[in-house]
Image (cartoon, rainbow over all chains, first blue to last red; front, side, top):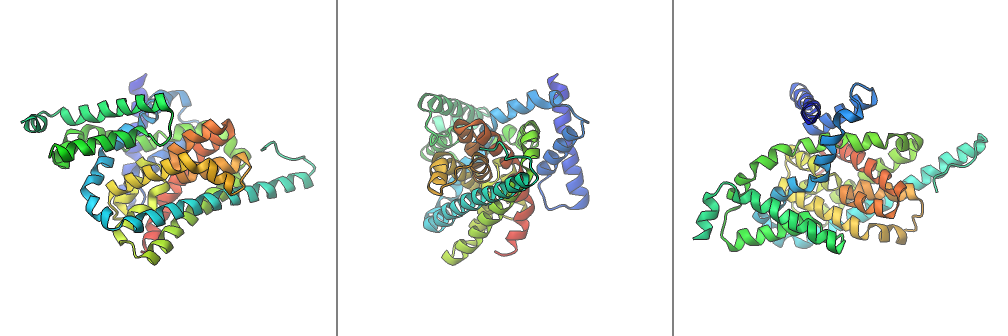
Length: 128
Length: 231
């Protein structure tokens, strides 16, 4: 039932808008809607087969919805031309730094939990 | 003459969006080059047509307004892939959260520090803060913290393509060998495009990347208003 699936997903988004509006939360309503739907799945209030078909369809064609805003960049070509290097350098460096930190910290903590497991006599994990 | 016909016809804008995305998808499927993301190639062609056809962006936007209404829904449905990977999350909860949180904080700190050192415009830096979140989340954050949503969307696409094309090679240079760590880095920095590439590297990388994308997006939404205070 596509309609039922759409109804459930819209309800999560509706609650997201209702809660951010009522409590003046500075986070996007759709992020809250995502958290609500995820919680509903975890607690079993919503089953995966109640939402999977519509979700998979939207995720598959996600990029189509972002063409219009991407084309909107043409309004800022002057600004970008003026600041080109000042945009590209922080953008690329921050991505490289993020890659490095995220990967190294994850590895570090995998090492920690593995050592703990060995100490408890459970053997190493099957991560690698 | 065709310029007036285009502007008067209410369907022309959406016809271009769907048509060029379709063409971009075919091109991508044939070449399999990560650089040729359909969203990138189709947007570039449409921009050229609008500029040379002297069609104002506002007209094109109005004709695509239906698509914009669906846009917020696309963040909500990310709960589905996250839930599917819940078992992986439970098994490595500590390293996963530690990696995503520190990576997200590091990349946002880097934007503030490097941007300020270089004297980049405040508007641009604010628009750049959510660049590692997936687009449905990033575009909303940008609006809330006073950024330029259009600029954010483009930066998000660039962050995705950069990580999707060079991510695995960068991680190799950084001597990161663990599959979990590689997936976490790809998903938290390069969202859906990084995740698509991660799945080509392996099943573990892919599912890690897919859950990292959802968690990093949520975290970016919470942290962005705080980082904006430093700009």
